[in-house]
Amino acid sequence: MKIKLLISCIFILILAGCATTAKYEKILDSWVGASEQQLIESWGIPDGTYEAGNLKFLSYRYSDQRILYGSPPVYVSNVRKGRIYTDVVGGTPDMIVSNWCKTTFTIEKEKVIKWTFNGNSCIAN
Image 1 (cartoon, helix red, strand yellow):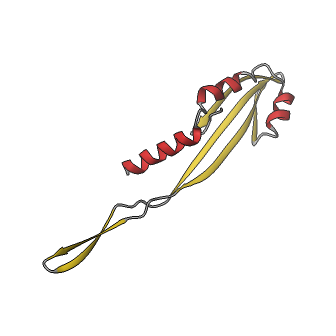
Image 2 (cartoon, rainbow, N blue to C red):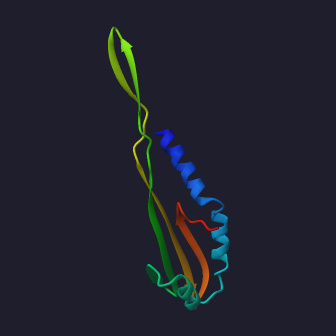
Image 3 (cartoon, rainbow, N blue to C red):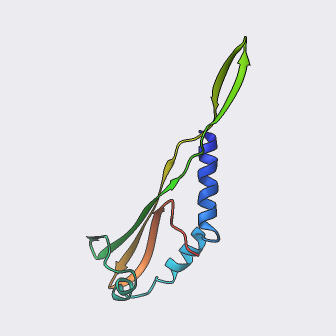
């Protein structure tokens, strides 16, 4: 199981390259003070909206799945007491890795005042 986790981490790091959460936060910071209309024109129609008092919350979601292909086992044959035995060693099954990010902008008086995000794929180049 630890090997699978290590392989998954390496794969995600390779895919991410130079993409970081800090760069994503910098992009989100640039939206503070922008109008709600500008945000929607750039990000598109939100996946969810919620209003509470004089605040509006616009949520955007991203998700995808990738297959991490496993490795085949190795077959090792040995002779024991005059008989040939074949043992199966190692091998890992394919794994599906899910990546997602939910970003929510808080709107007050038709302006973005702050943002939040969560997920394992909230990164930018």
